[in-house]
Image (tube, rainbow, N blue to C red; front, side, top):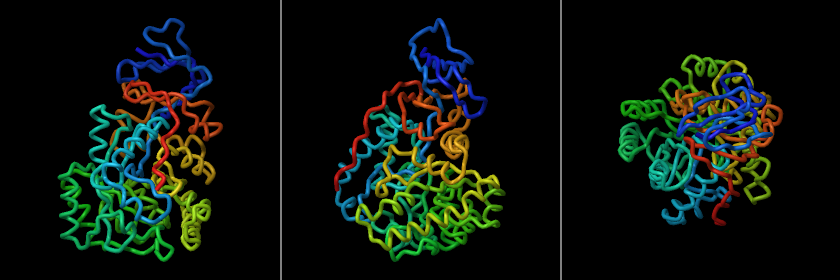
Length: 400
């Protein structure tokens, strides 16, 4: 047994314990105690001055690359074996940042599926994963150079079957424009209703979830009615879309970090000024809608769109900081990063809160994130299924 002694405990599903103890027995949380123990059995970690939260989640990640600009040439030139090795480094970076749940929503050459297997087998350290295999997108549409280009309902059904056969847990559809080229229209529809319904139907026949990339309200309406489980980016949410999200209990993953980075740091890294301006317009539009949706009760989870320029695999804390900057409370941001992520992944019975009997995924932070959400950057200890990891500096991405 391991005892984390003297820490503040934020269980998410109950009141904060200012100075208590957490007992871990094997892979499970044995007890959450209201005060430190004086005679612990087994190993003792002195956690005085630290705060315990559940393992956090990244719901919009891409382990198989990092783009220094929006030019897809360099990333496509990397051998898949090198991408796979770098992906294992990114997985370690993420785990050491307190991320124990990861949803991979698009990858090269099914590296994500093999990385998930390697983590599950204990070959490499990393978060618990669900993976979508290849992105599916329209020919010449958003993500060209990264996505698998698929057009028409029959072809989409076949492409979904291929991802499922390869071992995918879900399907990622790129259904609207985005922010990769200055000439793009993020608010244009790229898949028709017929195409989306075909893809979602095929995924659901296999028991798989569907995540839909959508900025405009028009695409989000179609995605919801087609049966998608999550809307990625979810920029425009007028009242009728909010009502649909609530009625169907659909989650959104707003990915604030990517648009903040592109709009604030894009010129510094040499992006097309027109692209930076486009990212700024999308950021402003997101702010116009998000808090209204959150106040109405729309469910939202954390995701940063890792792999985009300056969006690092270990920097989930930025998403929480931006959520608080926009108007959420730190407690709301923490819930989005923990319990809500577990719900999105169908793991709420075993993860997402510090509850006896659940899996022992615990993160010890320096500071109190309920006072200062940036404490989520200061990870001092990580436990995943009871295994203890001491964070090390993140491995940087390849320089090209």
